Amino acid sequence: MDNNLAQKNEINILYSFYQPLLTQKQDQYMQLYYGDDLSLGEIAQNYQVSRQAVYDNLKRTVQLLRNYEQKLHLWRDFQQREQLLVDLQQRLIQQDPQDQDLLSLVTRLQALDA
Image (cartoon, rainbow, N blue to C red; front, side, top):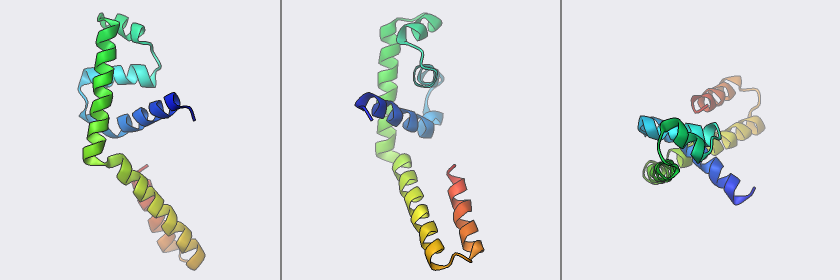
């Protein structure tokens, strides 16, 4: 995966975790730029601001999302939980595949983060 695509994926993931913490303008710019793939110029025209204002807002918002992750670890913890649940499910299938109650519990835990 090229670096630009990896960075965009990271930002989209962080946005999905921390979007409720953003201001309305931050949220709108992020959605338009990263979600709807509008250009800086298109967003600037829609909001009657300069391209530089949109760029600066997006840059600050991305840094804010990264700061939230450094402090709150929602994405990191989610990844760790997912891996633990996969490991648990595999162990259950190997050890006792007939125990549908335990397998059901793991499936329900996985669904909580979906």
